[in-house]
Image (cartoon, rainbow, N blue to C red):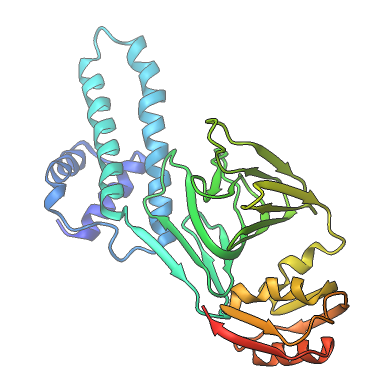
Length: 318
């Protein structure tokens, strides 16, 4: 059978409209699916996600709904029991088939100063800042947790699922994040991690201190959590302008009574810069306003030199 015929039978099976003859054909195909082409070839991510979700629903329907009927009519329903068992094995087998065919790492890497907007398989939207990397493994379906890893900086608009599946970032390394549906900015640069919560709630998990348990903090909208890896402590506060921590995704650098070291800390990771200054007079000088962010940092550096009346030298790019 070709892919279109298989897809048609799968659609009929999942909708409960498959005939006994068609069921036999599908069973026969399933027994030999190791040698078949991947039926998901050519499908968009959304179509694959929808098919997997329907497969999960069918598993629940067959395993839970029909189980009650079997118990009520157990004496004379051996054929029904076998049919449901076969269908259940088929669906579970197909689930592992999809997972086996698609379980592979996916990595997105941005260049210096580049901003990339992504949509994950569960429709979560991620805006990835410059010089950053987001990775995850495909094959999300059923009860599997949504897990991603981040190096750099990104703004997450996480979709809440009807079955309340959690979404985690860097769960096993560094400062872990767990959410169910929310919007927040997460920066993972060098020795400092920072989480700025725009809406919803975020569970922040500190690295394991060796006692086998991780300390956790729960953030409320408007709060900023900053974790220093050297002192191994998290500081939570409510900044006057939380937007300044994720205005980069709109191409803006918001200065909110900011010192030059604070500004440099924000931009050096994005552009992969190592910066030196010619004087120490700038340390107490604070400015407010908005500067444009572009792919090339040259104009931004020039604006900062004029604002703080210093010479900024780019000594190296990481």
